[in-house]
Amino acid sequence: MSTVLDRLRSPSITNEPPTVQEQQRNDLYVIATIVIAILLGWLVRNSTANAVRQYTFEGGAPAITLPADWIISRTQEGLLLRATDPRSPSTFNGLVEVSARPLREGEDLTVLNVSWPLKRSQELDRFRTLSSRAMIAPNGEPAQLITYAYIADPTRESGTLGMPVVVRGQDLIMMVGEGADRQLVVITTAADATDWTREAPVFERLYNRLGVREH
Image 1 (cartoon, rainbow, N blue to C red):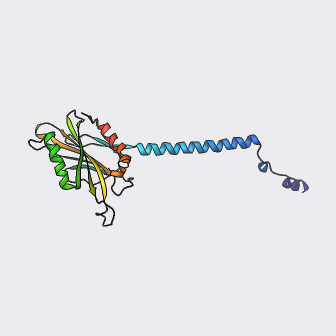
Image 2 (image 1 turned 30 degrees about the horizontal axis):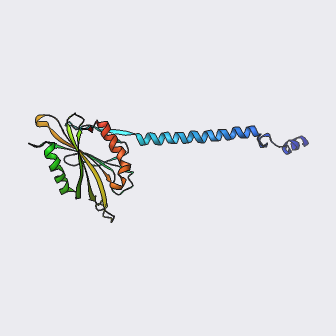
Image 3 (image 1 turned 180 degrees about the horizontal axis):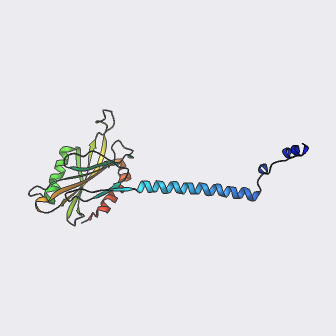
C-alpha cells in the first residue's frame, strides 16, 4: 500500500517542465506550423484570385477570358455575354459585355467612329466621349477603342435610393467574318470611375489574352 501511495505522490514525468532545448524545439515547431498555414492560405487565395474561365461564341466573335468568380447574367438580343464583378465595392459592379450584329452596308471604322458614340449618347445618360484610339483586332484587322464616361443609377432597378455613379467605359469595336457573314463585334468594359484602377488589370488581361494591340 505504501508503495502505491509513494508512486502517486511522486511527480509524473509528463508534468516535469521542459528543458530549455525542448522549449526552443517546441517554439520552432509552432512557428513552422504558423508559417506553413500562412503560405498555404496565401497560395489558395492567390490561386482562387487568379482562376479564370474562357467564353467562346459562334459567328466569329473572339473568345474572352474573365475571372472565374464573375457573375454571368442572362443575355438579351444581340448580347452574347454580360459579366459583372461581385466583389466590386461600388453599387455599379465592374462590367464586361460582348455584343454582335450583322455589319450594315457601308459601315466601316470611319463611319462607326462617328455613329457609335452617337448611338451611345442616346442610350446612356450624360454620355461623353473621352478618346478614340486605333487598334489592331485579334484577327489582324483594324479596330477602334472608344473611351467614354456617363452617369448611371444602379440602385434604381432595385427600388432603393442611392447616389448616381460616374461610370468610365471602353468599347472595342471590331469587324469579323467575310462577305454576307461579316459582323460588327463590340467588347465593352466599364466600372465606377473611382474604382477604375481596381478593375483595370482585369480589363487589360482580357485585351492581352485577346491579342489586341495598339495600331
